[in-house]
Amino acid sequence: MSKSILTLKLLSFATVALFSFSASSAKAQDVAEITLTADKVQFIFDIKEFTVKAGQKVKLTLVNPADSVTRQPHNVLIVKKGKKEAVGALANAGLADADFLTKKNCIPESDDILFHSNLVLPGKSETIEFTAPSEPGDYPYLCTYPGHWILMNGVMKVK
Ligand SMILES: [Cu+2]
Image (cartoon, rainbow, N blue to C red; front, side, top):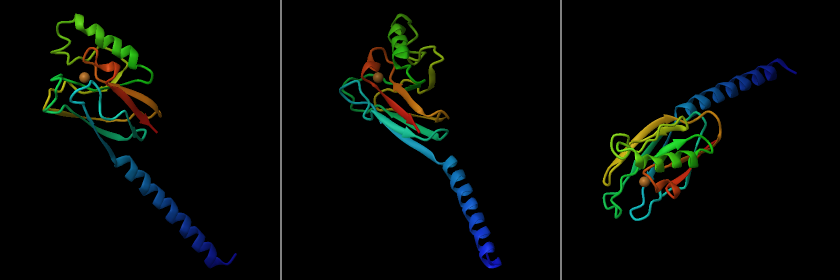
C-alpha cells in the first residue's frame, strides 16, 4: 500500500469517527414533543401510542379541549411496564379518599408511576418534561380520574 493511500484511509476513518460522535451527541439533545388530546365526548386520548428513544428528553402536553362535552378533568400518568391495571385499580379505589379528586389530582400513591401531570380542566393544558427510560419496551399511559383509565390509555414505546 502506498503511503498516500494509507494517509487517505486514516483520514477517512477519522472523519467517520468524528461524524458519528457529533451525530450521537445531537441525538442526545433532541426532544420528542408529543401532544395528547382528550376526546370531547368519550373517555379516550386521541393517540393510542407514540414512540420515543431510550434516554431521550420528552415534552408531553395534555390538552383538555375547551368544548369538552363531558366537562371532565383529565390527567396523564406514565407507568412501569405491565402496570396499567395495577395503577388503574388504585385510581378506582381513590374514590374512597376525599382528597383524591382535588388535592391529589387523582394521582395514586404507587412506585409504579414514573411520570405524571396534574388534573387538567376543560380549556386547559399542561406540559410535563421527563427523560424517557433507558430500558426499551412498552410503557403504558393512562388517565387516573376514577373509571377513565379503562379506555383512556395508550402505550409509550421506548426504542
Ligand atoms: Cu380522564
